[in-house]
Structure formats: C-alpha cells, structure tokens
Image (tube, rainbow, N blue to C red; front, side):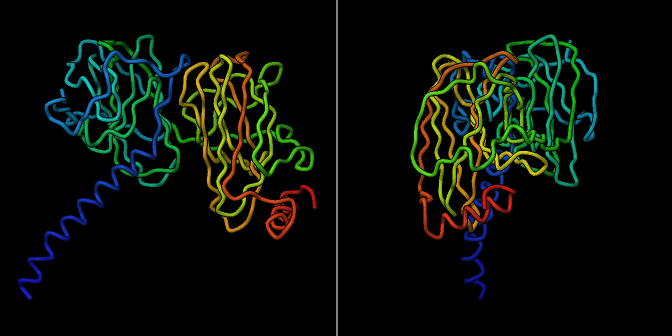
Length: 338
C-alpha cells in the first residue's frame, strides 16, 4: 500500500498543477481591459514570452502597503514621486515604466466589477489576483478593467504609468448592473428575421445612438448603431458574424432582447478603424431562440461608418419542422408572433 501511495503522489501533484493552471487561465478570461476613446494603443514593445526568464524584465512588486478599497469606492491618489518598481506585466505588452500605487480589493460575494481611472496623464489600471505581475496578471486597461461576468475573491489593483507617466488620479471601483436597452430599439419579431447564411451592405450613419456600453463590452461604443437584425439560432447551434468596415472603428453586439429582460450575449471590438471585426456565439439552450445583432460605432456620439456584414451558421433553423416550431414558441413567450 505504501508503494501505491508513493506512486499516487506524482499523479496528485500533476492534477493539482493542471487544476491551478486552469483556474488562473479561467480567471483571466473573466476580465477585459477598457480602452480609451482612441482605442487600443500600439506599443513600441513587442509581445514577450513571460515563460522564458531570459526574456523577462519583471521585478518584485511590493504589495505590503496595498491600500484597501471597497466596492463602491471612489478614491483620490497620486503616483508623483513614488518608486517605479514594475515596468511590465504578464497580461500586457505596454511599457509601464512610471511609478505605481497598489490597492487591495476583497469581494466576498459575486459582482459585476468595473475599475476605472481618471487622470490628466496616461495612467493605466492593472488587475492581479496575487502579488505577482506575471502569473497573477488578469487584465490591463488604458482607462480601466471590467469583468465579463460576476466575480469574487481577493484582488490587487495597480495604478501604473505608461511610458513613465505619473500624476494625480481618481480611482473608481464600481458594481455594474446591465443597462436596459429601450423597447423601441428592437423591431417587432415578425418584421425582420433571417435563419440562414446571409450578407449585406449597411451603415450606422444617419441613425441614433442607444447603446454606449453593456456589461459584456470592453470599449466605449458611444457612436451611432445599426438597426438590429434578428436571427434564429438552433439549440447548440453557432452564429458567426464578420463585419468589414469601410473606414470606421466598429463593434458588434449580440443581445437576447430589449426592455427589462435585455442581456448582452456577446461582444467584439478587436480591430482599429477600417479593420475586420468577428464574433461567434453558441446557443447553450435546449431549444432554438432568436438573437438581435447590432453593429455599433466606437468613438464620439456622432461617429458612424459604412460596412459589409456576413452572417453564417452551424445548425441552421429551417423554415419548417420542429426547430422552427420551437423558435415560434419562443417568439410567442416573448410577446412576438404566434
């Protein structure tokens, strides 16, 4: 029995190692950095391999004097004259060569978390789940970070200066609630429906701006957005959306409905102005359901642009049969077509 126990020890260690690695990777997927109004910065520093000590310039981060903050806090601080101990972080490739100030946050209950910073200099926010700028780094944002689902646990919030910046700042730690999308924004279900691969040209110009940000978004889409298009997605089916803009910086939302039950299902804003955006969503339900597709514009409230959109499916809902009946039943439950 002793030999068996000894043989089990490496296996248990391997299982624990894999489990811990999976936990950290999953935790990092819970957060997104929030870009500034000009979109993501292009850094002069290339992405680094943080697993290779020869390529890493990471130094020890001192969290011993971390300042406690609570959900709902708004605190004033300054990095002027403080030591610059940390120049880079494992979840970003920005040159964070300015002084830094560390805060601590304890979430005992799950919450939609947003941390934002306001400053006249280029200060960034870095979120860690341990005092390790490499392995503990969850997200780095130009104006803040946001969770993409409710989170809990212990965190460190680091305010650091991009390219040596230092300044006074205001830090806000906020619990978000989903923004209610106005009922009038979603057209009646029977007016516009598609259930198979389709593509068309459209624009966000000349339209209104009803959505600036939802819980699933990680950039500010204050510009004008397209009229929603409705698609049916089969149980377990996948919808893929590709948007090719002419010149504007566009983003894609997929929402379940409008009004009090509105919820953001997926979001995409990875490219710069004129670059392609792509989104994919899998219907996790055991029944077919409709979704609303919205193309929005990143930038100021009057920002807009033309685009080409392609929508594809794995698991097409046909215009007949049991899947279509199930979808019509779902429509009916939402107050649409019977």
